[in-house]
Image 1 (spheres, helix red, strand yellow):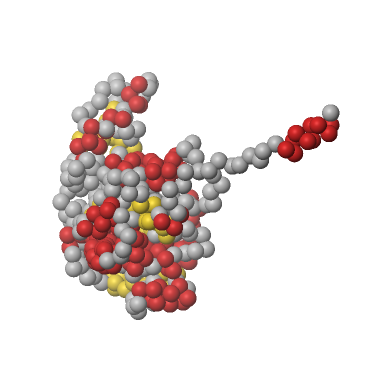
Image 2 (cartoon, rainbow, N blue to C red):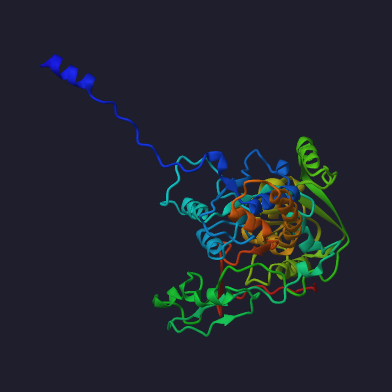
Length: 455
Protein backbone atom coordinates (compact mmCIF):
# COMPACT_ATOMS: atom_id res chain seq x y z
CA UNK A 1 0.00 0.00 0.00
CA UNK A 2 2.87 2.35 0.74
CA UNK A 3 4.44 1.85 -2.67
CA UNK A 4 1.11 2.41 -4.40
CA UNK A 5 0.54 5.68 -2.53
CA UNK A 6 3.99 6.93 -3.39
CA UNK A 7 3.53 6.00 -7.02
CA UNK A 8 0.28 7.88 -7.20
CA UNK A 9 1.79 10.89 -5.48
CA UNK A 10 4.74 10.99 -7.86
CA UNK A 11 2.62 10.65 -10.97
CA UNK A 12 0.13 13.36 -9.90
CA UNK A 13 0.22 16.46 -12.12
CA UNK A 14 2.07 19.50 -10.75
CA UNK A 15 -0.07 22.40 -9.57
CA UNK A 16 0.71 25.80 -11.00
CA UNK A 17 0.17 29.11 -9.27
CA UNK A 18 -2.74 31.10 -10.73
CA UNK A 19 -1.72 33.73 -13.22
CA UNK A 20 -2.76 37.21 -12.14
CA UNK A 21 -4.29 39.34 -14.88
CA UNK A 22 -1.50 41.89 -14.95
CA UNK A 23 -2.26 44.34 -17.73
CA UNK A 24 0.64 46.72 -17.23
CA UNK A 25 4.28 46.53 -16.43
CA UNK A 26 5.15 48.29 -13.18
CA UNK A 27 7.38 50.76 -15.03
CA UNK A 28 4.44 51.90 -17.15
CA UNK A 29 2.64 53.49 -14.20
CA UNK A 30 3.08 57.25 -14.18
CA UNK A 31 2.84 59.87 -11.52
CA UNK A 32 0.65 62.81 -12.39
CA UNK A 33 2.79 65.43 -14.18
CA UNK A 34 1.08 68.08 -12.08
CA UNK A 35 2.21 66.30 -8.92
CA UNK A 36 5.74 66.35 -10.29
CA UNK A 37 5.48 70.12 -10.80
CA UNK A 38 4.22 70.66 -7.25
CA UNK A 39 6.95 68.53 -5.69
CA UNK A 40 9.65 70.29 -7.70
CA UNK A 41 8.24 73.66 -6.63
CA UNK A 42 8.19 72.74 -2.95
CA UNK A 43 11.76 71.47 -3.12
CA UNK A 44 12.92 74.72 -4.66
CA UNK A 45 11.09 76.89 -2.13
CA UNK A 46 11.90 74.71 0.89
CA UNK A 47 14.93 72.54 0.07
CA UNK A 48 14.72 69.14 1.73
CA UNK A 49 18.40 69.36 2.63
CA UNK A 50 17.50 72.02 5.22
CA UNK A 51 15.07 69.77 7.12
CA UNK A 52 16.29 68.40 10.45
CA UNK A 53 16.92 64.79 9.46
CA UNK A 54 17.89 63.85 13.02
CA UNK A 55 14.20 63.31 13.74
CA UNK A 56 12.10 64.64 10.87
CA UNK A 57 10.51 62.81 7.95
CA UNK A 58 10.00 65.13 5.01
CA UNK A 59 9.41 64.98 1.29
CA UNK A 60 6.93 63.13 -0.91
CA UNK A 61 5.52 60.67 1.63
CA UNK A 62 2.50 59.44 -0.32
CA UNK A 63 2.69 59.08 -4.10
CA UNK A 64 -0.46 58.21 -6.01
CA UNK A 65 -0.08 56.67 -9.49
CA UNK A 66 -1.75 58.31 -12.45
CA UNK A 67 -4.39 55.85 -13.66
CA UNK A 68 -6.12 56.74 -16.94
CA UNK A 69 -9.18 54.76 -15.86
CA UNK A 70 -9.76 57.09 -12.93
CA UNK A 71 -11.39 60.53 -13.29
CA UNK A 72 -8.73 63.21 -13.43
CA UNK A 73 -8.28 65.48 -10.44
CA UNK A 74 -8.03 69.25 -10.73
CA UNK A 75 -4.65 70.93 -11.02
CA UNK A 76 -4.86 72.18 -7.47
CA UNK A 77 -3.01 71.91 -4.16
CA UNK A 78 -4.52 71.84 -0.68
CA UNK A 79 -2.35 73.30 2.10
CA UNK A 80 -2.78 72.10 5.67
CA UNK A 81 -0.85 71.85 8.90
CA UNK A 82 -2.27 68.47 9.94
CA UNK A 83 -3.64 65.87 7.58
CA UNK A 84 -6.63 64.75 9.61
CA UNK A 85 -9.53 62.66 8.37
CA UNK A 86 -11.56 65.85 7.87
CA UNK A 87 -8.83 67.40 5.73
CA UNK A 88 -8.44 64.21 3.70
CA UNK A 89 -12.17 64.25 2.98
CA UNK A 90 -11.91 67.92 2.01
CA UNK A 91 -9.17 67.06 -0.49
CA UNK A 92 -11.27 64.23 -1.95
CA UNK A 93 -14.48 66.25 -2.15
CA UNK A 94 -12.74 69.08 -3.98
CA UNK A 95 -10.72 66.80 -6.31
CA UNK A 96 -7.32 68.21 -5.39
CA UNK A 97 -4.28 66.50 -6.89
CA UNK A 98 -1.82 67.13 -4.06
CA UNK A 99 -2.00 67.81 -0.35
CA UNK A 100 0.92 69.72 1.13
CA UNK A 101 0.75 68.80 4.82
CA UNK A 102 3.24 70.67 6.97
CA UNK A 103 3.41 67.93 9.60
CA UNK A 104 4.51 64.52 8.26
CA UNK A 105 1.63 62.10 7.90
CA UNK A 106 4.16 59.27 8.29
CA UNK A 107 6.53 59.96 11.15
CA UNK A 108 7.46 56.51 12.44
CA UNK A 109 7.97 53.28 10.47
CA UNK A 110 4.74 51.50 9.55
CA UNK A 111 4.49 47.72 9.91
CA UNK A 112 1.05 47.57 8.32
CA UNK A 113 -1.54 49.82 6.72
CA UNK A 114 -5.16 49.16 7.61
CA UNK A 115 -8.44 51.05 7.70
CA UNK A 116 -8.68 50.48 11.44
CA UNK A 117 -6.26 53.33 12.08
CA UNK A 118 -7.66 56.80 11.33
CA UNK A 119 -4.41 58.16 9.92
CA UNK A 120 -3.80 55.10 7.77
CA UNK A 121 -7.40 55.22 6.56
CA UNK A 122 -6.81 58.79 5.41
CA UNK A 123 -3.77 57.66 3.44
CA UNK A 124 -5.58 54.77 1.77
CA UNK A 125 -8.52 57.01 0.83
CA UNK A 126 -6.20 59.61 -0.65
CA UNK A 127 -4.37 56.98 -2.70
CA UNK A 128 -7.66 55.54 -3.89
CA UNK A 129 -8.58 58.98 -5.23
CA UNK A 130 -5.21 59.67 -6.84
CA UNK A 131 -4.05 62.29 -4.32
CA UNK A 132 -0.39 62.53 -3.32
CA UNK A 133 0.97 64.04 -0.09
CA UNK A 134 4.09 66.16 0.33
CA UNK A 135 5.34 67.09 3.83
CA UNK A 136 8.01 69.82 4.24
CA UNK A 137 7.92 70.41 8.05
CA UNK A 138 11.27 71.69 9.40
CA UNK A 139 12.44 72.76 5.94
CA UNK A 140 9.75 75.47 6.18
CA UNK A 141 10.96 76.46 9.65
CA UNK A 142 14.57 77.02 8.70
CA UNK A 143 14.53 78.89 5.37
CA UNK A 144 14.77 82.69 5.15
CA UNK A 145 11.24 84.15 5.20
CA UNK A 146 10.04 80.80 6.49
CA UNK A 147 7.83 80.07 9.45
CA UNK A 148 10.27 81.29 12.12
CA UNK A 149 10.72 84.61 10.30
CA UNK A 150 6.95 84.89 9.90
CA UNK A 151 6.57 84.76 13.68
CA UNK A 152 9.15 87.54 13.89
CA UNK A 153 7.20 89.60 11.36
CA UNK A 154 4.10 89.30 13.55
CA UNK A 155 5.95 90.97 16.41
CA UNK A 156 8.09 93.48 14.53
CA UNK A 157 6.18 94.27 11.36
CA UNK A 158 7.26 93.31 7.87
CA UNK A 159 10.50 94.93 6.72
CA UNK A 160 9.80 94.37 3.03
CA UNK A 161 6.22 93.77 2.01
CA UNK A 162 5.77 93.64 -1.77
CA UNK A 163 2.36 92.04 -1.29
CA UNK A 164 0.63 93.72 1.65
CA UNK A 165 -2.60 91.91 0.89
CA UNK A 166 -0.91 88.68 1.89
CA UNK A 167 -0.81 89.95 5.47
CA UNK A 168 -4.31 91.37 5.73
CA UNK A 169 -7.67 89.68 5.64
CA UNK A 170 -10.98 91.35 4.84
CA UNK A 171 -12.44 90.00 8.05
CA UNK A 172 -11.40 88.12 11.18
CA UNK A 173 -11.73 84.33 11.13
CA UNK A 174 -14.79 82.28 11.84
CA UNK A 175 -15.65 82.27 15.52
CA UNK A 176 -18.68 80.41 16.79
CA UNK A 177 -19.79 80.90 20.38
CA UNK A 178 -22.32 78.93 22.39
CA UNK A 179 -23.11 80.34 25.81
CA UNK A 180 -24.99 78.20 28.33
CA UNK A 181 -26.29 78.71 31.85
CA UNK A 182 -27.76 76.61 34.63
CA UNK A 183 -31.16 76.49 33.00
CA UNK A 184 -29.66 75.04 29.89
CA UNK A 185 -30.96 77.85 27.74
CA UNK A 186 -28.79 78.60 24.81
CA UNK A 187 -27.98 82.17 23.99
CA UNK A 188 -28.18 83.14 20.34
CA UNK A 189 -24.97 82.12 18.64
CA UNK A 190 -22.70 84.92 17.55
CA UNK A 191 -20.88 84.19 14.35
CA UNK A 192 -18.45 86.65 12.86
CA UNK A 193 -17.84 86.86 9.17
CA UNK A 194 -15.43 84.40 7.64
CA UNK A 195 -13.45 84.45 4.41
CA UNK A 196 -15.80 83.56 1.60
CA UNK A 197 -15.33 80.14 0.05
CA UNK A 198 -17.39 77.64 -1.92
CA UNK A 199 -17.87 75.40 1.09
CA UNK A 200 -18.21 77.99 3.84
CA UNK A 201 -21.98 77.64 4.00
CA UNK A 202 -21.63 73.89 4.14
CA UNK A 203 -19.42 74.13 7.21
CA UNK A 204 -21.89 76.49 8.88
CA UNK A 205 -24.62 73.89 8.45
CA UNK A 206 -22.45 71.38 10.28
CA UNK A 207 -21.89 73.66 13.26
CA UNK A 208 -24.24 71.81 15.60
CA UNK A 209 -22.40 68.54 15.10
CA UNK A 210 -19.10 70.09 16.13
CA UNK A 211 -18.05 69.09 19.67
CA UNK A 212 -16.77 72.62 20.21
CA UNK A 213 -20.07 74.25 19.30
CA UNK A 214 -22.60 71.70 20.51
CA UNK A 215 -23.90 72.73 23.95
CA UNK A 216 -23.64 69.30 25.55
CA UNK A 217 -23.02 70.93 28.92
CA UNK A 218 -26.57 72.25 29.12
CA UNK A 219 -27.76 68.78 30.16
CA UNK A 220 -25.62 68.80 33.31
CA UNK A 221 -27.15 69.84 36.61
CA UNK A 222 -25.93 71.93 39.55
CA UNK A 223 -24.16 74.52 37.43
CA UNK A 224 -23.77 77.86 39.23
CA UNK A 225 -26.34 80.23 37.78
CA UNK A 226 -23.90 83.14 37.56
CA UNK A 227 -21.40 81.27 35.39
CA UNK A 228 -21.60 81.41 31.61
CA UNK A 229 -19.26 79.40 29.44
CA UNK A 230 -18.38 80.39 25.93
CA UNK A 231 -16.94 77.65 23.75
CA UNK A 232 -14.60 79.09 21.18
CA UNK A 233 -14.34 76.88 18.14
CA UNK A 234 -10.77 76.45 16.85
CA UNK A 235 -10.69 78.48 13.68
CA UNK A 236 -8.46 79.69 10.92
CA UNK A 237 -5.85 82.07 12.39
CA UNK A 238 -6.15 84.83 9.82
CA UNK A 239 -4.80 88.34 10.46
CA UNK A 240 -7.14 91.27 10.94
CA UNK A 241 -7.05 94.54 9.03
CA UNK A 242 -4.83 96.11 11.70
CA UNK A 243 -2.00 93.61 11.27
CA UNK A 244 1.46 95.12 10.63
CA UNK A 245 0.47 98.73 11.13
CA UNK A 246 4.10 99.80 11.54
CA UNK A 247 7.60 98.38 11.81
CA UNK A 248 9.58 98.28 15.06
CA UNK A 249 13.31 98.90 14.64
CA UNK A 250 15.18 95.71 15.45
CA UNK A 251 17.90 93.24 14.51
CA UNK A 252 17.25 89.57 13.82
CA UNK A 253 19.50 86.52 14.02
CA UNK A 254 19.24 82.73 13.72
CA UNK A 255 19.30 80.84 17.01
CA UNK A 256 20.68 77.54 15.68
CA UNK A 257 22.16 77.83 12.17
CA UNK A 258 21.72 74.89 9.81
CA UNK A 259 24.81 72.72 9.25
CA UNK A 260 27.17 74.01 6.59
CA UNK A 261 26.75 70.81 4.56
CA UNK A 262 22.96 71.27 4.49
CA UNK A 263 23.30 74.91 3.44
CA UNK A 264 25.74 74.02 0.67
CA UNK A 265 23.41 71.27 -0.56
CA UNK A 266 20.45 73.67 -0.61
CA UNK A 267 22.40 76.28 -2.55
CA UNK A 268 23.60 73.66 -5.02
CA UNK A 269 20.10 72.25 -5.50
CA UNK A 270 18.53 75.66 -6.10
CA UNK A 271 21.48 77.03 -8.08
CA UNK A 272 21.63 80.03 -5.78
CA UNK A 273 23.46 81.56 -2.85
CA UNK A 274 20.31 82.35 -0.89
CA UNK A 275 21.18 80.30 2.17
CA UNK A 276 23.86 80.99 4.76
CA UNK A 277 24.40 80.60 8.49
CA UNK A 278 23.10 84.11 9.19
CA UNK A 279 19.63 83.56 7.68
CA UNK A 280 19.03 79.79 7.70
CA UNK A 281 18.35 77.60 10.70
CA UNK A 282 16.04 76.87 13.62
CA UNK A 283 14.44 79.72 15.57
CA UNK A 284 15.01 83.47 15.48
CA UNK A 285 16.16 86.02 18.05
CA UNK A 286 14.80 89.57 17.82
CA UNK A 287 16.55 92.44 19.58
CA UNK A 288 14.70 95.76 19.61
CA UNK A 289 16.53 99.07 19.30
CA UNK A 290 14.39 100.32 22.21
CA UNK A 291 12.38 98.21 24.69
CA UNK A 292 8.76 97.59 23.70
CA UNK A 293 5.73 97.25 26.01
CA UNK A 294 4.66 93.63 26.38
CA UNK A 295 1.04 94.74 25.96
CA UNK A 296 1.84 96.17 22.52
CA UNK A 297 3.40 92.86 21.42
CA UNK A 298 0.41 90.94 22.79
CA UNK A 299 -1.92 93.15 20.76
CA UNK A 300 0.09 92.63 17.57
CA UNK A 301 0.07 88.88 18.07
CA UNK A 302 -3.67 88.90 18.75
CA UNK A 303 -4.38 90.76 15.50
CA UNK A 304 -2.04 88.46 13.58
CA UNK A 305 -4.03 85.37 14.51
CA UNK A 306 -7.47 86.92 14.14
CA UNK A 307 -8.29 88.16 17.66
CA UNK A 308 -9.04 84.79 19.30
CA UNK A 309 -10.85 84.50 22.62
CA UNK A 310 -7.49 84.17 24.31
CA UNK A 311 -4.04 82.62 24.39
CA UNK A 312 -1.57 81.74 27.12
CA UNK A 313 0.74 84.37 28.62
CA UNK A 314 3.20 83.68 31.46
CA UNK A 315 4.90 86.48 33.40
CA UNK A 316 7.10 86.46 36.53
CA UNK A 317 5.30 86.48 39.86
CA UNK A 318 5.05 89.93 41.37
CA UNK A 319 5.20 91.66 37.97
CA UNK A 320 2.39 93.76 36.52
CA UNK A 321 1.62 92.96 32.90
CA UNK A 322 1.23 96.60 31.93
CA UNK A 323 4.64 97.54 33.32
CA UNK A 324 6.75 94.91 31.52
CA UNK A 325 9.02 96.03 28.67
CA UNK A 326 10.66 93.62 26.25
CA UNK A 327 14.07 94.08 24.64
CA UNK A 328 14.43 90.65 23.02
CA UNK A 329 12.11 87.96 21.66
CA UNK A 330 12.94 84.35 20.74
CA UNK A 331 10.57 82.72 18.25
CA UNK A 332 10.10 79.15 17.09
CA UNK A 333 6.98 77.58 15.54
CA UNK A 334 5.39 74.54 17.15
CA UNK A 335 7.10 73.13 20.23
CA UNK A 336 9.98 75.57 20.56
CA UNK A 337 11.37 74.74 23.99
CA UNK A 338 14.47 72.93 22.79
CA UNK A 339 15.35 75.67 20.30
CA UNK A 340 14.83 78.80 22.42
CA UNK A 341 16.02 77.43 25.76
CA UNK A 342 19.51 78.92 25.71
CA UNK A 343 18.63 82.38 24.39
CA UNK A 344 17.56 83.98 27.71
CA UNK A 345 15.30 86.30 25.70
CA UNK A 346 12.88 88.56 27.56
CA UNK A 347 9.98 86.95 25.71
CA UNK A 348 9.58 83.43 24.34
CA UNK A 349 7.02 83.33 21.52
CA UNK A 350 6.13 79.83 20.31
CA UNK A 351 3.33 77.32 19.93
CA UNK A 352 3.73 75.42 23.17
CA UNK A 353 6.09 74.97 26.11
CA UNK A 354 5.97 72.36 28.83
CA UNK A 355 5.10 73.39 32.38
CA UNK A 356 8.70 73.22 33.55
CA UNK A 357 10.04 75.04 30.49
CA UNK A 358 7.64 77.93 31.05
CA UNK A 359 8.40 77.99 34.77
CA UNK A 360 12.14 78.18 34.05
CA UNK A 361 11.56 81.26 31.87
CA UNK A 362 9.44 83.13 34.41
CA UNK A 363 11.78 82.24 37.27
CA UNK A 364 14.64 83.99 35.48
CA UNK A 365 12.43 87.03 34.88
CA UNK A 366 11.28 86.29 31.33
CA UNK A 367 7.82 86.01 29.78
CA UNK A 368 6.14 83.42 27.55
CA UNK A 369 3.42 83.64 24.92
CA UNK A 370 2.08 80.39 23.44
CA UNK A 371 -0.66 80.07 20.83
CA UNK A 372 -1.26 76.29 20.88
CA UNK A 373 1.02 74.23 18.69
CA UNK A 374 -0.48 74.54 15.23
CA UNK A 375 -1.83 78.08 15.71
CA UNK A 376 1.79 79.23 15.66
CA UNK A 377 2.12 77.63 12.22
CA UNK A 378 -1.19 77.79 10.36
CA UNK A 379 -1.19 81.52 9.61
CA UNK A 380 1.97 81.06 7.55
CA UNK A 381 0.01 79.00 5.04
CA UNK A 382 -2.36 81.91 4.43
CA UNK A 383 0.12 84.73 4.75
CA UNK A 384 3.12 83.39 2.84
CA UNK A 385 3.06 79.87 1.44
CA UNK A 386 -0.15 80.01 -0.57
CA UNK A 387 0.82 82.82 -2.94
CA UNK A 388 4.49 81.84 -3.04
CA UNK A 389 3.73 78.24 -3.99
CA UNK A 390 1.11 79.22 -6.54
CA UNK A 391 3.58 81.43 -8.41
CA UNK A 392 6.25 78.73 -8.34
CA UNK A 393 3.88 75.98 -9.50
CA UNK A 394 2.57 78.12 -12.36
CA UNK A 395 6.13 78.51 -13.63
CA UNK A 396 7.06 74.87 -13.06
CA UNK A 397 3.83 73.53 -14.58
CA UNK A 398 4.48 75.49 -17.77
CA UNK A 399 7.92 73.83 -18.01
CA UNK A 400 6.55 70.34 -17.32
CA UNK A 401 3.78 70.75 -19.89
CA UNK A 402 6.30 71.88 -22.50
CA UNK A 403 8.68 68.99 -21.78
CA UNK A 404 6.08 66.22 -21.51
CA UNK A 405 3.83 67.22 -24.42
CA UNK A 406 6.47 66.32 -26.99
CA UNK A 407 6.99 62.78 -25.75
CA UNK A 408 5.70 59.78 -27.70
CA UNK A 409 3.29 57.17 -26.46
CA UNK A 410 1.29 59.43 -24.18
CA UNK A 411 -2.18 58.23 -23.29
CA UNK A 412 -5.13 60.37 -24.27
CA UNK A 413 -5.73 61.11 -20.59
CA UNK A 414 -2.18 62.44 -20.15
CA UNK A 415 -2.52 64.56 -23.27
CA UNK A 416 -5.69 66.12 -21.90
CA UNK A 417 -4.01 66.86 -18.59
CA UNK A 418 -1.06 68.55 -20.28
CA UNK A 419 -3.44 70.83 -22.18
CA UNK A 420 -4.82 72.17 -18.90
CA UNK A 421 -2.95 75.37 -17.99
CA UNK A 422 -4.84 75.99 -14.75
CA UNK A 423 -3.11 76.02 -11.36
CA UNK A 424 -4.70 76.51 -7.95
CA UNK A 425 -3.43 76.55 -4.38
CA UNK A 426 -5.89 76.79 -1.48
CA UNK A 427 -5.64 76.53 2.29
CA UNK A 428 -7.75 73.96 4.10
CA UNK A 429 -10.87 75.22 5.84
CA UNK A 430 -11.08 72.14 8.06
CA UNK A 431 -7.54 72.16 9.39
CA UNK A 432 -7.44 73.44 12.95
CA UNK A 433 -5.75 73.04 16.29
CA UNK A 434 -7.47 70.44 18.48
CA UNK A 435 -7.70 72.92 21.35
CA UNK A 436 -10.32 75.62 21.75
CA UNK A 437 -10.77 78.18 24.52
CA UNK A 438 -13.52 78.02 27.13
CA UNK A 439 -14.26 81.57 28.29
CA UNK A 440 -16.01 81.91 31.65
CA UNK A 441 -18.22 85.01 31.80
CA UNK A 442 -19.76 86.60 34.89
CA UNK A 443 -17.56 84.71 37.33
CA UNK A 444 -16.75 85.94 40.82
CA UNK A 445 -13.09 86.20 39.81
CA UNK A 446 -12.31 89.07 37.48
CA UNK A 447 -9.63 88.61 34.87
CA UNK A 448 -6.88 91.17 34.47
CA UNK A 449 -7.61 93.59 31.65
CA UNK A 450 -4.64 94.75 29.60
CA UNK A 451 -4.14 98.04 27.86
CA UNK A 452 -3.82 97.35 24.13
CA UNK A 453 -1.04 99.89 23.93
CA UNK A 454 -1.61 100.48 20.22
CA UNK A 455 -0.77 98.31 17.25
